Length: 259
Image (cartoon, rainbow, N blue to C red; front, side, top):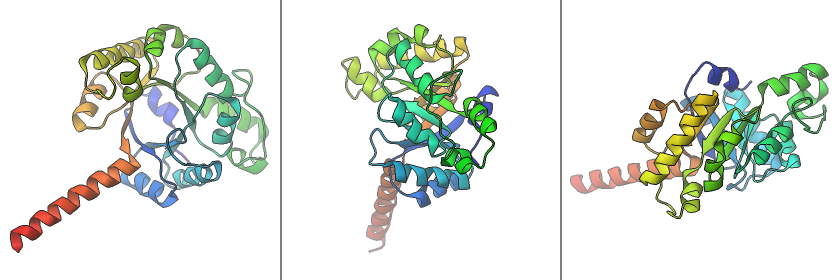
C-alpha cells in the first residue's frame, strides 16, 4: 500500500521525494527504505516503458512510498496507462492554461469529475477483485493530480489555472521556466525565483499545495519556509553519481595522504 499523500497534504505536511529514471525496482525499494515519501517515475525524460513503470509501482507498494508518474504528454490514454497499473497520481508537464489543467483533471478522474476510461481488470482494481464502486469512487478520492508550471504562459495564467477543480499540487519546473524566460539554465536567477515565489503565494491563497525541485539543503529550507509542501530533492541518477564521485574523491585523497 502506498502512502496517503492527499491526507498528508491536507494536514499541511511537507513531503519529500525524488525523480526516478532508472528501470530498477530494487533501487525504488532502497529509496523507500531511506525515507522518501514519494518518487516521481519519470516517463518524460526517462526510458521507462509501461511494463517497467508497473514494476516500479509494485516496488513502491512494498515500501509504502507513493508512486507519482510524470507522463510525457497531456493525453488521456497516457493517464490511463499510469493509473491503471496502480500509481497514486500523475504529474503533467507543460500546463500553460486553465484548459490544459482542465484536460488533465478530466483524464485523471472518473465521472462525474472526469472522463477517465473505465476498466476493472487492471492492477489498480486488483484485477477486478476490488468492489467496483469502491474502486471507482476511491480512485477519484485518492488520485493525486500534479500540474507543472514551467513556462511564462503558465505563470501569467496561474490565477485562472488555480480555479480549475481537482488540482492537488502545482509544481514549478525551474529549468524549462528559465528557458521560457530567456535565461536558460540560470535557475538561481532573481527574476526566476521572484516569479516562482509569486506562484507559491497564489497557491497558498487558493489552498492548493505548491511543489518545487530543490537541489540543495538551502533551497529546501527556503521553499519549505514559504509553505511549499511537495519537494523533490534530486534525481536517482544524479544522487548516485554525486555520492559516488564524492566517495571516490575522498578515497583517492586518503590514499595519497597515506602513500
